[in-house]
Amino acid sequence: MTITHAPGEPIQAGAAPARTRAIPAAAAALPLEAPDHERVLVSRGRRSGLTIIVAVHSTRLGQALGGARLWRYASWTDGLADALRLSQAMTMKNAAAGLARGGGKSVVVIPEGAPLDERGIRAAMLDLGDAVESLDGAYMTAEDVGTSAELMAVVAERTAHVCGLPPEQGGVGEPADATAAGVHASILATVEHVFGSRDLAGRHLVISGLGQVGGRLARMLAAGGARLSVTDVADGKRALAEELGADWVDPEDAHLVEADVFVPCGLGGVLTPEVVSALRVRAVVGAANNQLASRDVAGLLTERGIVWAPDFVVNAGGVIYLDVASGPDAVAAELDARIAGIGDTVASVLRAAEEHGTTTLAAAERLARARLEAAV
Ligand SMILES: NC(=O)c1ccc[n+]([C@@H]2O[C@H](COP(=O)([O-])OP(=O)(O)OC[C@H]3O[C@@H](n4cnc5c(N)ncnc54)[C@H](O)[C@@H]3O)[C@@H](O)[C@H]2O)c1
Figure (cartoon, rainbow, N blue to C red):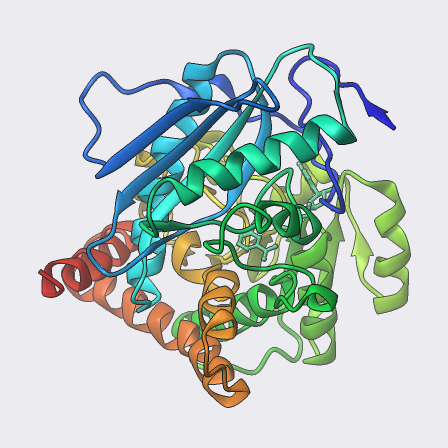
């Protein structure tokens, strides 16, 4: 099988879900300031010929943990900028989640216009394994956009510093169940903060994106008695809406629905100033990574009185799952408690923002920084 791509389209590899939009160029600009990362490895894969980047932002709390992205970029420097940004975000996510894990991320750069067949993907994963192994345990990789549990099994041929392999190969599999459970706990905490009760019966939620996480979440929310409006750019997801008795809205109109909570579970960058000024909800809580198109959007949400539960706190269920379930003494009860704890963290972040008169983004970052500083 040969996979070809239109420029700007992400690659689809292994069992990875389809992605329909490339990372916006603006998000991938290389910063002028020197990065504060501990180590950044840029190498040319000897088998694949592709640029392999591993960015270790921080190991202050422990071995860095973050996914491996197999993605198409206009240039290798765009891939580098993405790795720098994403690894830094993983430091904040892992710290806010209370994990003894630092932040890191790897990126395999697919040049625009270049086709990549299964052999090429396998070669790239072996090259990634060598790059990870060369860091002597400073970083552990996992699946991310464009990769999959199956591809992590290929990485594992070259390094032990990889998690999330398929269960039939002794791994813990993909973390979407845990991510959805963490988002659900976050929604309950946010609804309680805003409305004074965790009861979802009769609450109206709008879910944008019914993929691995959004689909599971829709089922959980429907079971809790919520009224749902849902959407996805993939028309095939209408079947789930019908099954759950949810209203279907057009993807571009989802943020215009008058409801209690907007739940972004598609791609990042969804909260632009334009979208925020048009929202007709009291809260935004969702799985999507990097929801804010820019940092100042956090202030716009606060000004509009819309409570935003920071994405890197809300969607940490996946990384908690990978950390706890991959450990030597994984206990299901501990995992459940840690996932449920995401709701407690969200509640304390929302309270702290209110008490200090800051954005919820600032409150969540303060929590993560405090944990990092305490570890020195
Ligand atoms: N899977 C996890 O465990 C996990 C963990 C942390 C964060 N996240 C983040 O959560 C989000 C969803 O992850 P996923 O694993 O469910 O991905 P997925 O690819 O399975 O699902 C995403 C869904 O969103 C839809 N979509 C894309 N653009 C859209 C748009 N503009 N409007 C409406 N729908 C759109 C896609 O068609 C797809 O059905 C991503 O941002 C991901 O980075 C996922």
